[in-house]
Length: 374
Ligand SMILES: *[C@@H]1O[C@H](CO)[C@@H](O)[C@H](O)[C@H]1NC(C)=O
Ligand SMILES: *[C@@H]1O[C@H](CO)[C@@H](O)[C@H](O)[C@H]1NC(C)=O
Ligand SMILES: *[C@@H]1O[C@H](CO)[C@@H](O)[C@H](O)[C@H]1NC(C)=O
Image (cartoon, rainbow, N blue to C red; front, side, top):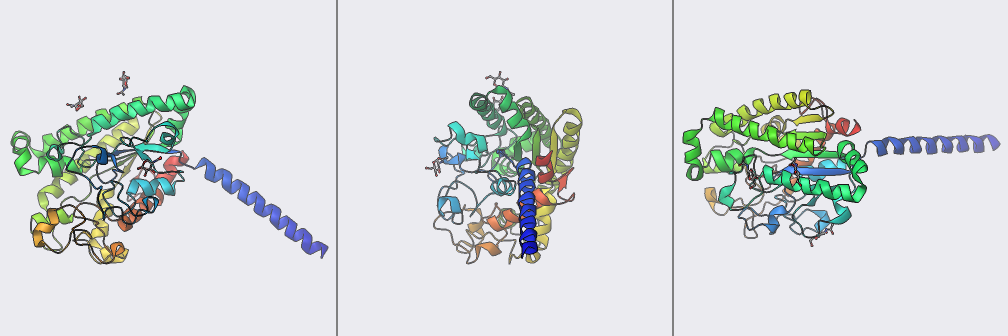
């Protein structure tokens, strides 16, 4: 009896011990804040506050977003974005709040702020057909304001530590510079005539370099930069170009590939030149391409049609955004794409988990869990 008691007691101690150490480890690895920049792939509601044609503030967008009870939030998907899920996986206590929301003030900014905007790009001119959107230059101006607010909330030296060590800077941008700038015939013929793809891509990279230096000056140190996905293969492109299921649009795909190669060089350059900073390159292009190619392996029944907006108008249905009158698929978790541009929550979960825990195929030089542990 006494022996049993002792053993139980020892076991309990061991468990308490394990728990304690487990907790300490988890605490070290916890992400305090995400600062999120980019386009509609990660917009969490900024465009709700702009007069813009690029909006996701109507149902059925958000139908699977638990925190809003299924109401639209401005996210361009049925549930969480990649950035929401990355934050959750890394232990961030709350989602990053949209910068433009009127109640984004005071302590809520300590879990991060989202500056991303549907239609936004690296270049200022990108997305002008939507009338309004936040480009990267302005998003970083806004972070500069947030940076000062965090200084006031925590005191300057703690704020610096908080931003350098416990914050993740996530940037998903670039697709619109092609889709809603360079490749748009009626808006950008001027640009396309005056710039061949090489100089256009070079222009993007040069602007992006300056933008990332600015974030570094504002104490950002842990970065994840996504490359541009297979934009020639999204349902939008397949539909407007009347492609068959397996085909992709070459020009769009070539531009993405060319930009991604230059982005890889830029990330290596920044890792060499900016002391104390780590830039992780997220290879979303290869990951999404793999998911599109082998969609059935990931539990999807199609990768060529979005869940929202299928059916009714035939080919034309593809270019109308997801709105209350759109037709909706029956099983949202079996569609890789939510609408004609954006991944579904089911796809975002797979993407986010790969970036957080995955291997060198999709994140270099390390995954996001390792980045946060630095
Ligand atoms: C801010 O307002 C929105 C919309 O009313 C609400 O959904 C959200 O929970 C609020 N956020 C905070 C941090 O209070
Ligand atoms: C882009 O627009 C912002 C805000 O209007 C401006 O501050 C910035 O200088 C512009 N960038 C370029 C390269 O024109
Ligand atoms: C941040 O804003 C201040 C003005 O408040 C300006 O002097 C500084 O250059 C800005 N920093 C960056 C990196 O944009």
